Length: 471
Image (cartoon, rainbow, N blue to C red; front, side, top):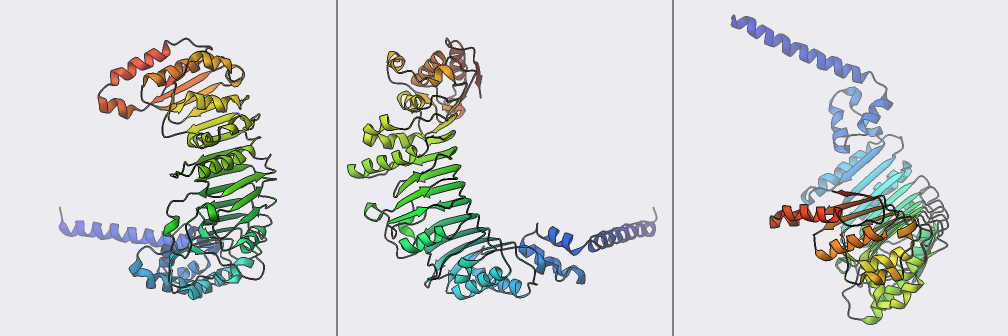
């Protein structure tokens, strides 16, 4: 074959590819600015800025993108990040910034950061995320942030006191507020923050410090979703002059949930959270941890605090409850008969690190007369006498309960006995799904035992014509 002919073909192919690339780019270049800016919004801010080298048409397109994100990935590149943010905001055109995210170590740069916040407020930011850490000076965010009229969603994540301006806090458009590891400074300013969000719909308070606050109420009239995490883990390690959270400085938080639909709580119950006027809540999740505390008074107090939470959820339709929460109630057993009857509850999920004891399950079932769906996250076990169950049979087992899902069975005899009882007494059951912890059987090399247990369960007498499935 002629070598020169082959070289000509290769050149032609390269030329065609180049021409096609030019045509393709020209095709994109002919699109309106609005479409190109929309395309750029799917790129990271860094990559969007890089498109400025493509052509003169692209040189300043990135200065109009509605979303800007800046994250400090490596400490030794902090100066580079700071200069990048500075340049991006300096070259910004007059268009609005819809979404702005900043995550970095503050050190001694709070004045620069406040100037950036002021800039995005001026550009009528709607969604703002501030993840700030490593403070070497007192942090006081610009007052302009707390009177931003355009802001619809705000996330503050910082290991520091949240110092609020002496003037009023006003977020007239804010619908979603996320506070992470924030130290609330005092009663008045904390109340000012929650009261300054008149149309707030979603509130997430995650591992914040309340020890400077004695009492506060949360009552946005349009609040639909509230999540509170109150875990004690790492709170003593905060990079601030905050004392550890304990009983002497716990806070009472009253929640007026006139429009509340979804409520979730997870933590050690360091503070006293109380739901009031919360009949609208239909979906709830409660996970209260047992504290490693030898003070009986503290244990009893936690039980009463949990009782108050559950008492405010009487109309809930879907409930996820950690079994550890029921164990907390054991410290004040006189509260069990006082638990509300969940007349509207149709779906109950009980989570646990160990199989739930049958008596604990019955406690909830007796107070859930209309329960239709039951899920046990880590199996079930039984230590009692079957006749004792018949004395106070939960009504849902014979009138409503149609579906049961059981996960994490190990094949223990007491687990299998508990399933036998459930199959016998659940007279309207349509489906029961059983999932074994296959890892246990595989490690012991006893897969045949798993098949034998499955066959044994299939042979149990049933109080209904339910189908049994093994997952």
